[in-house]
Length: 330
Image 1 (cartoon, rainbow, N blue to C red):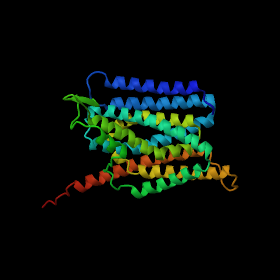
Image 2: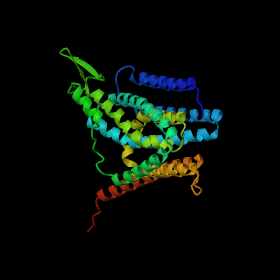
Image 3: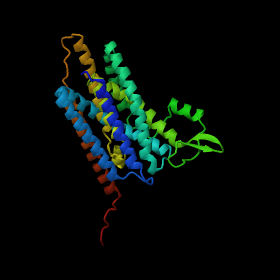
Image 4: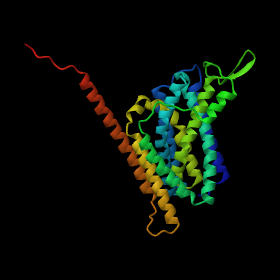
C-alpha cells in the first residue's frame, strides 16, 4: 500500500495532538489520582478511535488491509497487557506516587512510540532487502513463545535495570526523593534529575525491549510499514489507561502468558510457512489474514474467560477453607 507523505504527517500529527489533549485534560489543575471513571472513558475512546481508523482503511484500501490492521492491533494490544505486569513492578520498585503515575506512563509511552517508529522503519527496510529475515523472525517468535511458557511464574516480582537506565544513574546526579512531578531541579546551584526522570526512562526503555517480540509478531501479519506503525501507535496510546482500568485484575489473568505464547508461536509458524510459500515450496500454505484474525481474537477471549473462571474458583475455595466448621450441639 503506497501511502503519500501527507498522509503519514496527518496521522502522526493527529496522534500527537490527541495525546497532547489527553495530557492537558488529565494534568490541568491540582495533581490527583487517575480514577477508574477516567480510565474507562479513555480506554473506550482509544479503542473506538482504532476501530474508526480500521473502518476508514476498509473504505479506502479494502478489507484485506483493514483485516491486517485489526489483526495487528489486537496482537499488539494483547502483548501490551503483558507489559502492564512489568510496569506495575517498575512503579512499585521506584515507589511512584499514585497522583503522578499517569504522567510517568504517558511520557514513557511517548518515548517508546518514537523509538518503535525508528525500529519499524529499520525493520521494514531490512525485510524488503533481506527476505531470509522472515525465517529469522519466525524462529525467534517460536523461541520466545517456548521461553514464555518455561519462564512463566518465575521471578515475577523482579525488575533488572537495563544498560540505559544504569548509564543515566551514573551520568546524572539524582535527588533522593521526588520533587512533585518535576524531572529536573536545581539544588545549591547544581542541576539534578529526580527519580521521576529515571522511572520514565525505565518505562520507555522497557517497552522498547518488549518491541523485540511485538514488532516481529506484527510483521508476521503484514509487511506494510504504515499498518505496522499505526497498529503499534493505537495499542500504545491506550496502554496507560488500561493500566489503571485493569488494576487488580492483572493478577487474575493467570493464563494470559499461555495465550500470548500461543499467539507468538502461531505467528512464528505463519511467518516461516509464508516464507516457504514465497520460495515456491509446494506444500507450504499461505495463511489468510482472516484465519490469523480469528485465531488471535479467539485465543485472547478464551484465555481471558478461563483466567477469570480460575480466579473465581480459587477465591471460592479460599473462602471455604477459612470458614470454620460447624460445631455439634449436645
